[in-house]
Image (tube, rainbow, N blue to C red):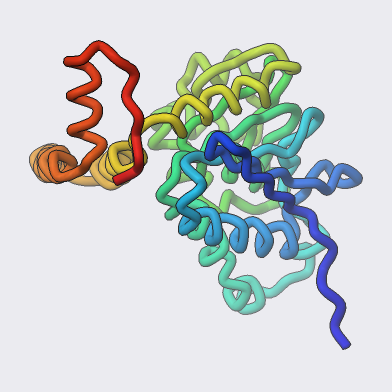
Length: 261
């Protein structure tokens, strides 16, 4: 009889529509092993279709986000074995989540942990957080989007420096080069991420979903195609009740009440 793996990813759905996803493997600084990846994917698939959930905060807790992949799981692996794991399907559950995802990063976000943060839409970092892609020091390279998402976030010259040297990037420097959204004191990281998530959760979810989808898809399209995509999504929203409610509330000088319709 196969026993169920110990839960290492915990999900809490709050009354304000914010889901908190917490990775808990403190003994190994939340290193990503197969159980973490599978439970993260399962959690994000469920949250993606949960109408109660309007935004998501992803955290590793107050001490560490994710210090990297669990090296013991791949140290002696063959190329075919790595291919057969198809971890890209697990990462896709996060990348394709239609709800806004905010990473609350304290401590290390290295290797797969940095890639995990970059799967999110907003990154709130504690002042002592450290980011990096140190795979080169193991004779490897980033394999879950670390080269592609990083270069899109910070540009060629910073991305090359970070990936080729495997250096650690302190939170203030990460903010300066566009790698994170905000830097706050360590004790404010999770509360600030929750504030942002709650603010987004109170907004019309159809508009929020369209903004996220168009921004991500449009980033890789030619400008004319991206503008057409934006225009069509903008026009589509005029069929929503929330658009009418937002406009009427503005004209009536009252607070809008959004239903998600």
